[in-house]
Image (cartoon, rainbow, N blue to C red):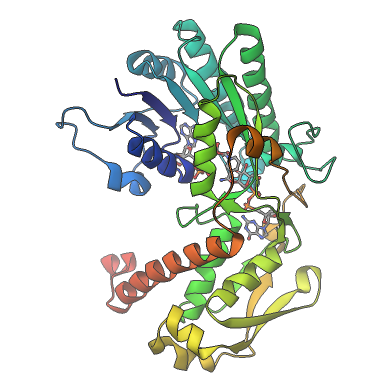
Length: 383
Ligand code: NAP
Ligand code: GDD
């Protein structure tokens, strides 16, 4: 018998990698996707199977974390061995603009899933993974952060996730459910949403290298994050649900880096040097030089002539609109428990993560570059 997994948030970064990982392990994967006015399954299109095929390994259902009836029906119909609750309004800055919706999806959504499993008498069959977050540590009370570090959330997103964390613990203790939290530190990839800081940077650096963009405006350059690769992190989610006993685990690399250094490293990946000057909203970065051999190898010979003329120009600025009303300044995790109990280790270094993201964004932006050159823009429709 194939094991059955249900993934909420399957169309997101982690959902896509996890679906692929579980399908390779022989699971039948059910996924919940939201109705949208355009296709929203780009990240999992390579896994899609025609509904007329028998014994499909990927089956998608329309649904939403704010709809209890829908969640209960899907869980009842699919009878999953494992539920991975990855769906969330996951953008910290946006949660300040949509706090009520964020609480509904990210806090009550977790309760809806746990309660559906209980009411359907699946409490002893279905194991549950809750996507908790290092944002729970917020104004950090200890460095590095581990499972016993007190929480101090700093955004509507983190406060909603705090409820999700504790209701998962509560259902485990009250009803003996195999329900666990993965307290995951930031993890990125070529599939990362374009408005998270790493992807915003690798996209912008690619576009600047190709001559498609002059400058990128950022928020707080001094914040520090513990960044890993999403491919490594979905292995941890799976491992957590394979343990005999449910528990909560920090998943992190143990290395923290400023946004400023992430930008520097992304330019360096393609052989471009930059220098930061000034402070606060006045801070900028200029192009200082190119390693032509590396640039040619990574970006392409045809772009170097134009780029050479830009040395000395400003390519990074600060726009206070990207600041958060309350910020999380420093995250760095201690994943000793995951290492010792799960045998989990990250395979990707930060350099390898940046290389992967830059390679993919350069490829994507080049496609965009040639389409634009050939005049394929939506505006042409009205001209
Ligand atoms: P993501 O790329 O933003 O994906 C979020 C997913 O949730 C998408 O599939 C999205 O659907 C779906 N979704 C949003 N609201 C929903 C709703 N009301 N009902 C049903 N589905 C909904 O996030 P991610 O980076 O993969 O993260 C996965 C989970 O881990 C999230 O819960 C996030 O908060 C948590 N987390 C992430 C990190 C990280 O660094 N990536 C770290 C710690 C914890 P659409 O595609 O339709 O938008
Ligand atoms: N998004 C963004 N855009 N962030 C910026 C920018 C910018 O232009 N400039 C600086 N930053 C800073 C933010 O202020 C924050 O300190 C840091 O970069 C990281 O921002 P994000 O990449 O948006 O991620 P996050 O840390 O707020 O949240 C992500 O990680 C959490 C785990 O710690 C999300 O994936 C959450 O869903 C996840 O829980």
